[in-house]
Length: 166
Image (cartoon, rainbow, N blue to C red; front, side, top):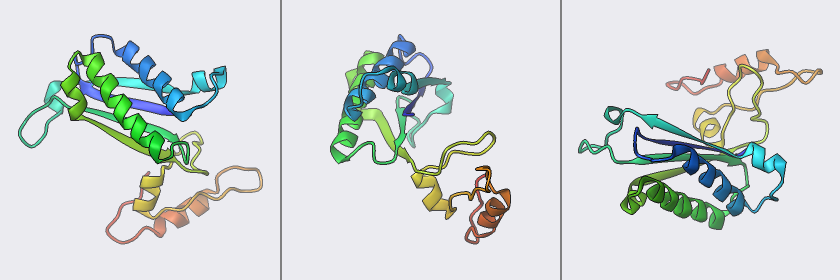
């Protein structure tokens, strides 16, 4: 289920597909999961090429890369988290042909928590978003389907001044 999203200015990488494949393979190695089809087919990376005008820091520089890694909760202990940040930054710099880009690569780690599986039309919850918004897990009826009344109740429980996610 691990997913990797890379956001960079168009043209940053000579071969975006090769980068995606290297990142997915590296994540499997760091997680130390068995090299079997179930993990090979469910570990994926997506390289999103953005217009250079859509990326900027305060000074106007747009030579940054953002990498977001979504894993199951608990899949990465602290040592593995540090390895992901280090290896992914290095791989991004190598793929761009600019090793200094590793210093301008931001790697964000996100965990999908239990009960956050996606039903069609429902968002996948992550640890960071559920804590920030104060939402609870959806309840399920006898048939195992989401109890939408329970979801509406959770939306009413959002603290004043915060908007619930749709």
